[in-house]
Length: 424
Ligand SMILES: *[C@@H]1O[C@H](CO)[C@@H](O)[C@H](O)[C@H]1NC(C)=O
Ligand SMILES: *[C@@H]1O[C@H](CO)[C@@H](O)[C@H](O)[C@H]1NC(C)=O
Ligand SMILES: *[C@@H]1O[C@H](CO)[C@@H](O)[C@H](O)[C@H]1NC(C)=O
Ligand SMILES: *[C@@H]1O[C@H](CO)[C@@H](O)[C@H](O)[C@H]1NC(C)=O
Ligand SMILES: *[C@@H]1O[C@H](CO)[C@@H](O)[C@H](O)[C@H]1NC(C)=O
Ligand SMILES: *[C@@H]1O[C@H](CO)[C@@H](O)[C@H](O)[C@H]1NC(C)=O
Ligand SMILES: *[C@@H]1O[C@H](CO)[C@@H](O)[C@H](O)[C@H]1NC(C)=O
Image (cartoon, rainbow, N blue to C red):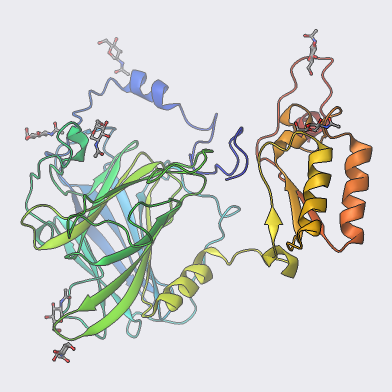
């Protein structure tokens, strides 16, 4: 919420420049005309299954003529199912040629290959149909209730479903095949009618923490995942992308409640739909992505806190924070100069309002360039003295450091973070 100018925390686009032909180059060199419609997408057929102690691998082949809806259908896919632990099941569907973007291990280290077999004991069970390929995830302890995740067309509401927004044809659900194209992936799962879904952030959701799934007068959710540096718009994509949801499910027949979690480990731009079509007996989630692979982790919970712990164990826990990090902080975009910072700290003290940490946003810097200070409004020696005074009072100072490092403008322009970085 702090740096309003540059692309602060935006890791999400999944583009690696120079490595693959650009989308435009591909479009012009392939001569494919996109149908812009998934109705005729053929889905996939599963074959060549190899089972192991830890799960299974198999091949998926495009089950008919390419539909080329919004990209080129990828004919050969691989699937790897790994029973990662008692509580965590990994389902990864990727292009066999490995050309689609995958988040590098250097960014998010994946859980190690298990050394214990959980295939017969894990809380979650992977089930599948071979043709057309579909999978569903059940709880071993509760095999007869609705699956936690279920991509079978027969479990989903009948299609075509007309647009929910009559002025936006893309809000229709024409069909629910598995679509895996270079620039478009689509997969849908049935959910219990009106179930409780939390997450799919980062977002300030008008519905509150519980997401609108289109029941009880709700309109449903289209959650875009595409990190961008904007203030605090309601229901829109903002700084971070966290394509994980927690489902808290209550069964009115048995009065049992439980939670589970689903992570799509992807940095691809996407829209995630939560919807309940008119007259449908189930709700649904649909992922529509513009790249990457389908890399799902399922967490069995069964409590909310356990889901979050299982998620953390999979992608890594947050960085340890110093105790003072949990204290009172003050920050805004728009402190005009160092005198304002000083007046601020003094006023807080005079008013007896606790203040552990004073911050500055990137308007502190010379031309918003990280690791500098503005020579007029935040002279380096004055800032240094200010920080020393804070430290003497056991207070702390944080300058926001933007992820974007400025490019030098010309040969007389001196900016070492860029020139040194380029050299290295
Ligand atoms: C695309 O179409 C043009 C015109 O029909 C043709 O000259 C060209 O060779 C085609 N390119 C490819 C990659 O098929
Ligand atoms: C896709 O094609 C079907 C069948 O022709 C049609 O009913 C539907 O409206 C089309 N969808 C869009 C988004 O144009
Ligand atoms: C609720 O539990 C009953 C009895 O086990 C089961 O038949 C039903 O499918 C469950 N409902 C859902 C939505 O899972
Ligand atoms: C419906 O779609 C139009 C066109 O994309 C958009 O401007 C409008 O905000 C949408 N309405 C709602 C309620 O989302
Ligand atoms: C579930 O709870 C309701 C309301 O407390 C109660 O009437 C019903 O008998 C309970 N059902 C079961 C199977 O325990
Ligand atoms: C600092 O900024 C404030 C607010 O714009 C202004 O009133 C004040 O004169 C400035 N002080 C200095 C030393 O530039
Ligand atoms: C080079 O860039 C600096 C900005 O850092 C600017 O002040 C200067 O005028 C530029 N010089 C030329 C010759 O464009």
